[in-house]
Amino acid sequence: MEQKTAEKLSQVDISPMAETLLLELVSRKEKEKAADVLVKRAGILTMISMAVLLLSIFYMQSQGHNEVLQNILVLFTVWWGQLAAVSCILGAATLITGKRKLVKAEEEFEKLREELIQRSEELWDTKERWETRHELFSCLQENYDINLFHL
Image (tube, rainbow, N blue to C red):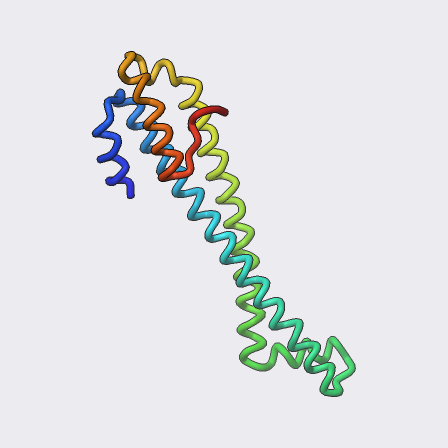
């Protein structure tokens, strides 16, 4: 993906500094998207695992076992109960670390995006570059969901 972006940017007349910043911006956006996917998948895994554990406890209780604590202990003695518990714990841990990564990636992306917008006049210093800037920004918004038109 990075090479494809570099090829597109090389076709447009922009300064080397702007090209470097735009490539880094696209890279950071991809990191942000990857972290978002990780958080979503970890959340789904955690919810499914919790649902399996809770449904198992309710099932055992409906079978005549009245003690909830006893049902939980019995649940952890069967392989699928252990698997559900481990996947729930791993899913929750992945969700927590993934959320931290997502927040960090969002902050890094936003910092660079704001810098690019603020340094716009410096990066597109000639009249020709300034006029092609709009096309480049539209392309980035369509292909990568990166809005450089305003803060």
